[in-house]
Image 1 (cartoon, rainbow, N blue to C red):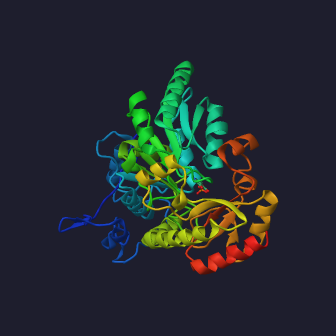
Image 2 (image 1 turned 45 degrees about the vertical axis):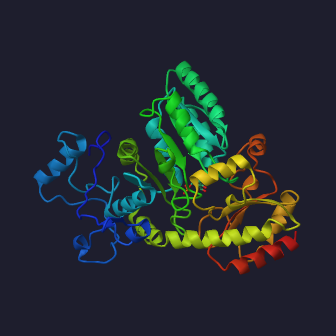
Image 3 (image 1 turned 90 degrees about the vertical axis):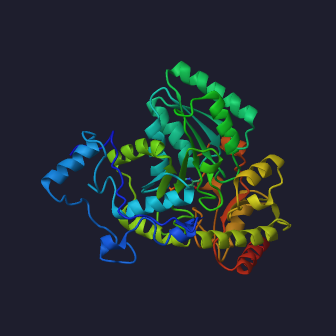
Length: 436
Ligand SMILES: Cc1ncc(COP(=O)(O)O)c(C=O)c1O
């Protein structure tokens, strides 16, 4: 079978979508109930069935030939429908349409995990000699992929602290250009994570955009951003200058701690090379997970709103507690630069924050071991409250000096607030702190 490496499989859009009524543009929360799905194609079923199939039947040999002429580029216009499930399927297509709606993106792609999305995204734009410039901190696996895996293939990186100013960004991009020239490559991508995991440090996307446009060719070096902590409800990076948004859909989008998936969205010209590599490698989200995500996206707004309201109440209680050194919550920012970025980029603080317990690892562990409602588990963005210790868990692989530099301290507990009753959660944190 020939792979559609250079000519990605185009999408079939059978139904005319209603996205406006009387000049009013419909909101994502409305569109999540039907956008991208045509019941006529599925026996009138209100909800999309789960399409468990590895391949799709051609109407005739001639139609099959036309599909492949389209896929391989021998005929303009691409394939006329679905071909093979490593490339796409109905559930994934609907999910991709709906993910694009949330991000205001032209196109989106879904993957079997957030890390599959991030790895394929980076690989699609890099070749030997290239440089990636990234913000810090990043989720440890993303940072490890850049440094340890892409490094094996001759791709190097430079990083900058999340809150970097325009001057600092200009300096790192200038160094990156020099390095790329020495290596015979290009600056392949500016990769951001904002808020950064686990410190919640924000990146000034508008400043990154201005610095990129001044120093580099915007057609060659995309700005990608991991928007897992706030998106897609509380931050829309494409509107602030990013070209590509990446997600661990495992988190708020999935929202029930019962699936693993990832996504990227952006303009079609940025998505096409990523889709082509996904077509070759696989890594597309499976139909069952896509179906569960469609269900999750219907309640995304109310889940994220409730979790955020809860987090505001919980942090209000924690911030003045005598056993608490500080709370790294976007709703309680004290640093002027971070607050300025927040006010320009974010519409809400989300529900994941860092709690600095007075003391070190021992005190933090005592707090964690005494929680009764909150579960001691990595991950975030679920309906239930989770707590973990990044220095000893998710970020253990990060070198101690770098952890210290990034503020991933031994007394940092990361908390993701769920949709339980806020008073109950406060009672739980109160008794766990009493036990420290
Ligand atoms: C910010 C961020 N990005 C990416 C990932 C990776 O996502 P996944 O676990 O779905 O592969 C995570 C996981 O915790 C994360 O927190």
